[in-house]
Image 1 (tube, rainbow, N blue to C red):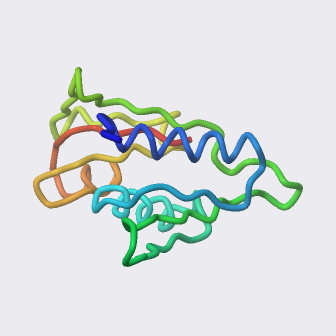
Image 2 (tube, helix red, strand yellow):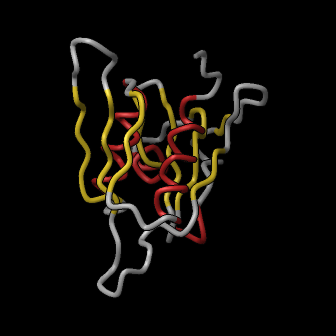
Length: 133
């Protein structure tokens, strides 16, 4: 099956798994999805992730979701910003802050995929992929 927006598919799978209180979710793997998962782990939004390589089928990305001590969601919102039909770019001074800096934006720059704060510190702009809070 051809997927037109794999990042949106990743965010939707995570959103659905969080609403259903699943411990983990899996999806087809790609380089950009792995980079997004690395950022989410570094920022504390997910517990862990791993890429399973099955020689018969395609690689899978397995994401272990994180919940609070009373079982509350650590991630309350996931939003895709730049879409295949409407790309959203931001310069180094225009990178969005999510909820006044509480949330996280993920940006694809010329130096790779990074959080909005890292891009701001390195004075890089790029395509705003998604927001997480």
